[in-house]
Length: 302
Length: 255
Image (cartoon, rainbow over all chains, first blue to last red; front, side, top):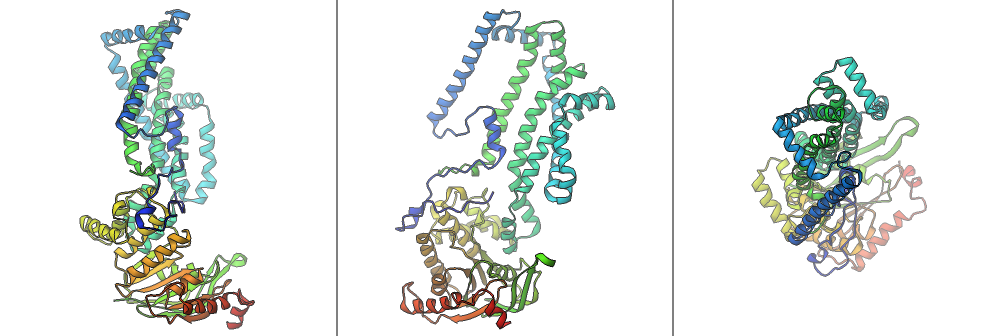
């Protein structure tokens, strides 16, 4: 994360304001932007209000187009095989009337938070250890790689068999799958700490605790944020699967239940609200928070 | 209260056994209060090592080093600006004050003043990535001066900049430093720069770093970079650097 030596904008020797920087693009130095690219969302920021309106309109248009394609497919293959968007949304209302719409989501959300917190704690502890200690890196680094390459199903089945088919097992199993990729991100963050900044602070006689709090930790937060965000999205996709395998409540269970009844409409009705909720959380909470916290990475002159 | 620095028979070895490299050896130097000393030499001559020792960042040396008074305020300017990228220019300057126990509001006020003084008033709220290299180094200069240092240590602060920006910053450094007597130790590999800025130029040899020449620059200020007297002194300094025996032979003979 070193600031690149640059001679940009220093050409005109006339006055000081002449070397006010032209907007420069900061290279995507971490997975932060990669995560955004995963979803196919452009990472350039709309700058003016009209731009923002326009990009909002495009999102609405994109969603409408998706619904249209979905409806068309539904006509093509038959509504019993693929129910259209309207039928699926109406089926949500049916789940609501039967009283398990919100309880399913609540239970699943609780398990997701539990699994996510376990994975985050593990990733922070292990990632920090691996990033700080050469010995630990050599001895245990490969373990993380091995952990990341074990198929999810194998881990879930082993945990269910050894811990028992219960909520704890669901959370621990999911956490075990999610923790390795999160650990990699934290590990990268610890390695990316720039010792030159610490040296600077020490030369200016800044106390040790202040250095830790204001120089070292802020350097790792983008990586921890990336770890958390990718970890969370992995967790919620996995949890449904884990529930389907061994829980008798939650969104995953409901999907399995209607799968057994071959009721495609109700399968959709179980999955859709949950997907919508997770997307809302991503776009209305995580993204804005990330934009605000890491605004210094966007090098546009304001 | 400007500071005085005394290096006595300083040696510094990195690594051990067969891989050991001697960075500096037998360096005796004393920097008087209010003096501006430039150290010059090729890379690997131990300039940075001596600066690290002077800054108190390196304590693994042999010999003795003293900073008098021990509580002298110290500031550093590095080759890279070393700014905290997530903090605005203002907060980067305020940071070192806050680290010394100055209240947040007072620190920001003094930071703003200093940023104005280095000519970046309009950019105080910008993040480092929004500033050019020259502007970043200006912020770094403001950060060094805001603590009102008794001792200012500079490690090739202008060598990563293009020559036009460097020349401008050099002049500003001179004008900003002339307000108050400070002891300055400045490392560079630019002979002209050394002679223009300093009262005294120390020439170091490489592998290991030892003092091969100690040249006084007895030219009154304000100086002009093209002053024939400075050019003459620069040529004299260059004769030590270009000496056929320069890298180590002469140093070993001296030791």
